[in-house]
Length: 207
Image (tube, rainbow, N blue to C red; front, side, top):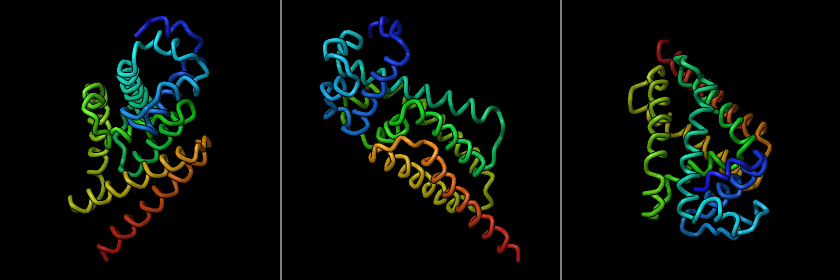
């Protein structure tokens, strides 16, 4: 990567990053077109390659940048507090909302890496994305221990919430909807609804 990329105005850096992240999120690594990226960014293809060399270098940078950016947002929103499971989800969705405000496709891109099957892409993403996944999983598992259910039910709850919340973000992104407040509020409504169900179940078990 050419360090001169960082000499660009922040607005132009973000425009290039958003173009690349969005294209990789929609197309996957193999089918992502640098022509589409340069059109979205409003720059020449030659300039894109001037900064990043080739598609593989750009993909590696996008993976690393996205993983580190989201982890930093999570740490800023949650701090060092030990949160209950639903408090953690609410704080996490606030953090994702802040990410989406600046990089609308970033959470969807990171989610899409679970489905990536290109060997080159998997190798390029390996280090930074593995760190991101471990960070997010550890955060969820610590919080999940606060839910009064047996282990199997806790995992079903967590899988349900992960699928639902990632789906909300992905559908909004695929509609090219950039209303991060509406996306956050929809996610929060699902978290609060599930919290009510789980709390009600816990109470009835003791009656």
